Image (cartoon, rainbow, N blue to C red; front, side):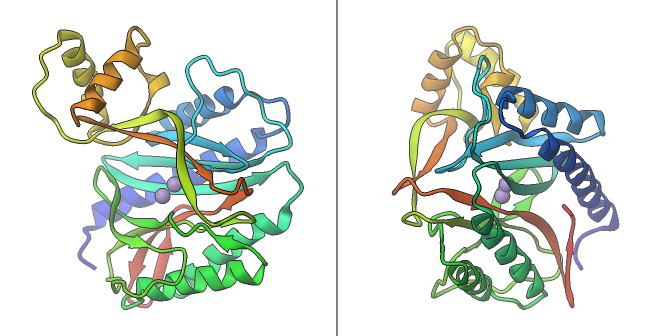
Length: 292
Ligand code: MN
Ligand code: MN
């Protein structure tokens, strides 16, 4: 394995914190509870345990697959929803990424479809496994439950301070892929749906990242960029920032290509979506799941 032991230890620490926080957060998801309270709790607990959020706590419900997070003054509460919690922790830039579906909607089989797909995929991971094989086993498993994978959402590699690195890990059969190597860190994240199996961006974004730094003239924008330094290119939430003229400045910085926004991803046919995700380190004879 190419990775130093100190790096492996940082990934494992991020994964341990993540698993503990996930367990605490899952217990909070009940009808009537505020989404904002849950997201803030998750992010606070990560810091209390010695980690940093790798991205805002995503709370995406029903036909929203991902990239939803509460706004600063959000008043929404959980109802009879299919709730996806997607949480990330980093230690010194080394990221563990996990997602779990908490079902308040009465569709346990849909939740199981993505969970079993994830476990089946983990079961075939070792140095030499092709991403083509991973996509195929995920799609086959989800189909066996009578559902479809979301074709245009994928898992991904992880790199220091890079949440979405190569390789892309497909959730369906694809023609071409790459072979995993020992030391690769990847997140596998099947999404299952009773809808069309495709998502599209919808509405305004609550999550952004700094994409490409360029000089800016507006002093207020310069000040905001300085504030964003601490995220080192990782995604951040609007609600984490001072709200004064924030939308105006985020729009400006996005328009000139400095910021990238992540609008919520909605199922094209309005289908319900479940998701399961773990982060793992590929080994010669298997893999080490760091987010259990
Ligand atoms: Mn995730
Ligand atoms: Mn991920």
